[in-house]
Image (cartoon, rainbow, N blue to C red; front, side, top):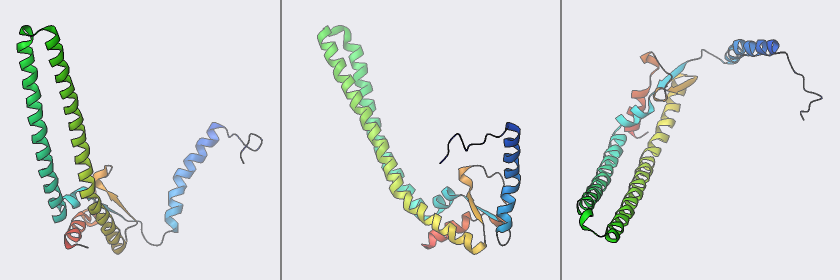
Length: 184
């Protein structure tokens, strides 16, 4: 249990020195305990999945679904725009009560349209997850298998950012794609 009686406060300079030492010595001590060299592989998981046959098939299905939802929403949006223009043109000929009623009806339809658009977005996100999650899991297992077989200490996903250069000998993206296609 930590309390103020057994808590020692270090001067700021001493604390900074400890942090610097741990940064300088910590990684090398950990690496020294490993057997063999520390090697890092790199994979672009999105590219591997996207270039695979299963990824292309899933993308095609998702695109078909997206285009269908998009056409439905565009049709409804055009209909609402037309109703809004008609109301604007007819506003002077309508009684205030009729104008307010039609305006409220239009606002309700716009609100329903916005809800439909939100649900369509959620539906596409869910479809994407359902299609891509199994492929991502396969790609992760394949990556781990390749990493073990090549003796990599670690594999970074270059699509996640941070990787500015990698020697092609350590890039396993194409191999992951081949294995995804092979159904492994």
